Amino acid sequence: MTPNKSLPPSPDLLYGQLYFDIQLAHVFSDTKTFVDSIPDISPSEIVALYEQEKILPNFNLVAFVKKHFHLPSFPASTYTSDPTISPKDHINKLWDFLCRPADTLTEGSSRIPLPFPYIVPGGRFREIFYWDSYFTMLGLILVPERMHIVRGMIDNFAYMIDQFGFILNGNRTYYLSRSQPPFFAEMIQLLADADHTENIKQRYLPQLIKEYEWGMMNSDQLTDEQSVNSHVVRLPDGTILNRYWDPSTTPRPESYPKEESHRQKAQHNGISPEKFYQHNRAACESGWDFSSRWLIDTKRVETNYAADIIPIDLNCLLYSMENLLASTYSQKGDWKSSKKFEELAKNQKNAIRNFHWNNETQFFMDFDWTRNRSTPAITLAGVYPLFFKLATPEQPAHVHEHLRKSFLQSGGLVTTLERTGKQWDWPNGWAPLQWIAYQGLKNYGFNESAAE
Image 1 (cartoon, rainbow, N blue to C red):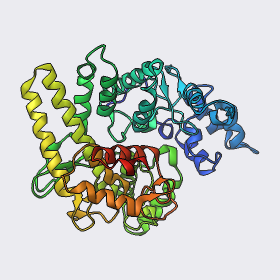
Image 2: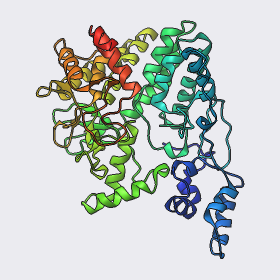
Image 3: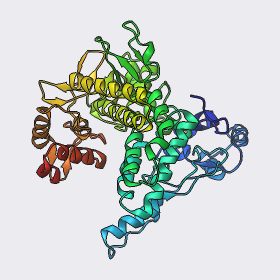
Image 4: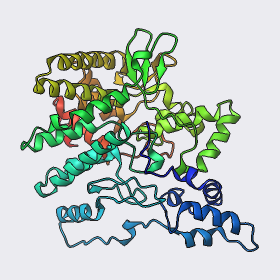
């Protein structure tokens, strides 16, 4: 992947020692604050000034940063809820509050400009996020006057694919090496179901095939001796499945120096820095950052082994992508390509049933390709095969029983069964997973449980 030459490098490379000094000095309580800041003069001038001034008596790093950077605001702190309006009106006001206009390129900013308006998650997340956006669209699509935002967000993701070859985690330069769960196919299908004024699926076919090819890159090079490359893994029987993966082997700029601390612990236990950072970044690409799902020792982040895991959710999403490609090529009259992707989807379905279904737990689980067995983590990602209608006739009842017995609580479904204090663990439940579970249960007739 070759970045757009008009974009600056990520902040750690752009500011060098100044970046590290700011993050190590904990100038901001949130390490994402500085990497989202905008310089008031050129970055090279700021770096030169820093080198001159830092050796002076009474130099103050905090004052220097505040003088030369526009710090990001926290819009939520300026939003006031109106308890007199209806929930529907409240949500509509939030959409307006979270909508951002098309971007312009700002020198030194980590924000990657997008050509159309978009919705941000809010709070410290001031940029578009890939997989969050699908669930945002589920709400927007219900309001006719908001459909143009859905279309614009999909166009933004198509633009990313055209520019970078894949959809970034978010539109920041420090996300240029990784993606998130690939929901682009679901977005296209959502818009196609709602807007019949043009052939939506064929319109985005060039970008969809590019995203698929990016996810399957180097799969034709896999052998028994070289069984893993980028996002693809070849299992002993020749089956090819996918993993989360980021080629970078450095700390994430938005999370330094916390990750440096975890790296030191990992290295003390014999794990190389490169290996630790690659596992850490793979977990971040999953969107589940962080969770016991990715840890050998569920209490210790430094035992992350996410790149050794074939995740159930990711491979269900690849199956859906293959299905949409097959139907779109069929619609176009390209029967050869349609047949190719039909066969790929069929093989993917069989692989998911064979490798992700655990007969002992009677649940869909992640697969550890290095040990050729299921991982020990039982997580809510196991509902994805129901959402995509991938289960055998017998499997849904077992999944349903597991959800009711272990996951269902008064506030919804918990994410995992491990109490670790991490975001994607017990007792936390996340809206995207609630929706995946709800639809998955409905797909197999468990309407009463879905309603709960």
